[in-house]
Each structure stands twice: as structure tokens, then as C-alpha cells.
Image 1: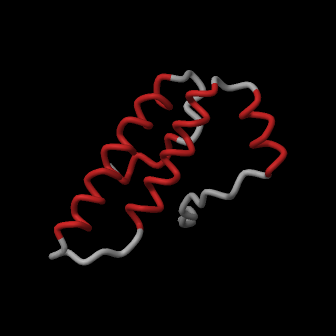
Image 2 (image 1 turned 135 degrees about the vertical axis):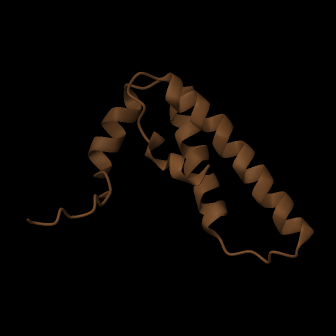
Image 3 (image 1 turned 180 degrees about the horizontal axis):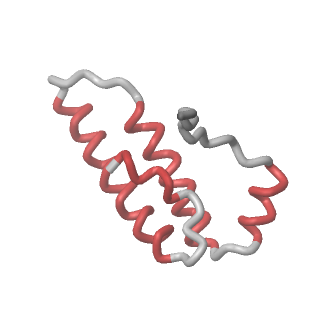
Length: 86
């Protein structure tokens, strides 16, 4: 039986992204950018004993969750494939 390859997210070409952003509400586009920023912050290594780093992570989680609600409320749900972070 052949093994299936894991799904790999390929980057969206710039022209396709620009086209889809023109046809989406501005709050959804802004929320997608916030999700990307929060994902970068959450993937950044941090010291587990640092109170400041833990506070920054909590703020990034909150930003991600707020943005995810906005993106998920849009029918196309572009970008909400990053739910595995929350």
C-alpha cells in the first residue's frame, strides 16, 4: 500500500495574494497579518523561566485568538489553517 505524502503548505504567489486581498474586507486582511505576526512571535524561542517572555507569549496567543475569530467569521477563511498554534 503506498504511503501518502504529508500535506505541505506552499507559499501563495504574490499576484494571487494581492488579488484575494483586494476582494476581502479590510478587517479580515488586517487580522490575517496579525495572525502571521503572532505565529512568528510564538515560534520564536524563549526562556521558560523569564516572566517577561511568558507575558509576551500570552499577548501573542491573545492576538492570535482575536485575529482567528475575525478570519474564521469570513466565509472564505483564508489563513485559518494555522489553528494548530492555539
